[in-house]
Amino acid sequence: MSTQTIEQLTREDVPVEETWDLTSYYPDDDAFEADLARIPGLVEQAASWQGKLGESAATLRQALDDSMTARQVISRAAGYAHLRKDENVADPLRSAAFERAVGAAIQASQALAFFQPELLQIPEETYNQFLESPELQPFRHALEDAARQRPYVRSIEVETILAQSAEIARTASEAFGALNDADLDFGEIENEEGKLIKLTRSRYQLLMESKNREVRARAYDKLMTAYEKHRNTTGALYAGSVRNDNFYAGVRGYESARAAALLDDNIPESVYDSLVEAVSNSTGIIERYYKLRSKLIGVEDLALYDLYVPLSPAPERTFSIEEAVDTVLGSLTALGDTYTSDLRELMSKRTVDWHETAGKNSGAYSSGTYGANPVILMNWNGSTDHVFTLAHEAGHQMHTFYSQANNPYHYAGYSIFLAEVASTINETLLTWALLEQTPKENPQERFSILNNFADTISGTLIRQTMFADFEHRAHVAAAAGEPLTPESLSEIYGGRTELYRPGVLNDDRSKLEWSRVPHFYRAYYVFQYATGISAALAIASKIRDDGPGARENYLGMLKAGSSDYPIEVLKRGGADLTTPEPVYAALRVFDEMIGEMEALAEEAGFTAGAK
Image (cartoon, rainbow, N blue to C red):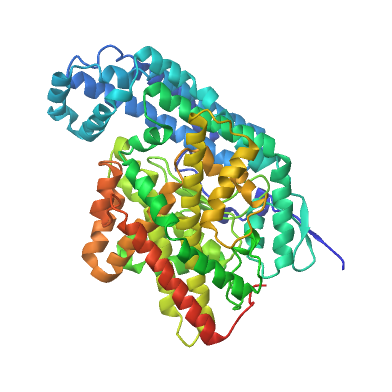
């Protein structure tokens, strides 16, 4: 069989209208450089208030205003540099610009490290009087939140040292990013058409959906061989990241790294524990899904590379960019005309960078900086899965858009605990819209839609809870003095895969999956995907069933930003995660979907459709 190598696109090959437009950040690189040059003076002005914060409410307000001015410029410069770097992570000039922006942010953090400890040295009685003053009402929640941190804020001298250490603390994460995005070479594999293609992580995700098991196995083997060869490096990097987390938690007096990570958003640790408990107690539902998957692809020993291939024998639909945008917008009508028209207008302003190109950061994300259009990075392959990814990232984009439009800079951000709700509600509404458009006389297509969403629940609620369980156990082990080695990490991870993936082959390579998960370098981050999908299903159901009132509650959540604690904002949006009920409800939805898929498969009489 003859083979042909398919070359990867460069950025110059892509039509400009299918790249993002960053001029809402800066009209050009010169403007970026000019803003970067302003930062030292702005930081100096904000730092000039050191030693004066307790003089009066008016003085504190001016200090806060100057601090926010400096932080906003830093955020814009760092955000722009990050996006330009991700266009080609191998470009040394872009990397250098990003490093300078990050360096400016770190220097600002060091110079302003006095702020919180000095703020909390104000006598409590005076502090409470300040809270009642008219000048500080726009900052009241932020000041109340700062007071909650009193037990964990160290002296100004220690805080300054901790701020200076940030330059060192980011080494593990950045080294893993460089290895993962630029240095790892997965080689070439032969695809279904007999053509040689360069294996990338984005292409790997697409190949995992191939109906040809041999293609999936070859891609998995190539990918994991690369990570296996670097397991000592990734093991050392992740162990270093965990030690960082535990060190900073200990220095500040937190009980654990998890307590430190969750306290910032005022999330009870019981939310984390109840998530893990609910999912780990529901392995019967998970096993039922894997048995259906094993039956329909016609294999007895389900492997890791069998978990993402669509189960329906219906051919995979391919979407153009225009079709994808129209499909997503059409599915979101339950959110109202204003929401859909705002999203369409944003996308018309070139806020999506669509194509995978040489050196471009892999995966997908949405990013926003105050005062600039929030943008989406994609590595578009035209699949149904990527249509769902677009809907997901558009949820983030609109959350950012509404949060920034309705809040001052210091409340315009929002917690990831909230962010994954917005993205997953969009995916849920897209699923329901596609089901409504698909008649019961077409069981294969309906099955395909259900299969896609069941895989979303499996990948988000089940897999991310498994990740959360693993990373907490790794942090606890390190805190207890147990060495984290590639072998010990694989042992911990293997125990979790055995529990959360019942019936799936649990070999040495599947146990090594921890070594390729970038989110592990952001401590106690991934659990919020699982709580997010649970809350999203609850809120989406209310929007569908309860009408305009539920929709307005949800839109109010998008507009709230960080003006209140995320648990409280989410309650007002329609979901209470201080109880495990939303998690159990999501698992019940998963179980119901599996039942419908079983019935449809039996009715249509298809098996081994994905082998």
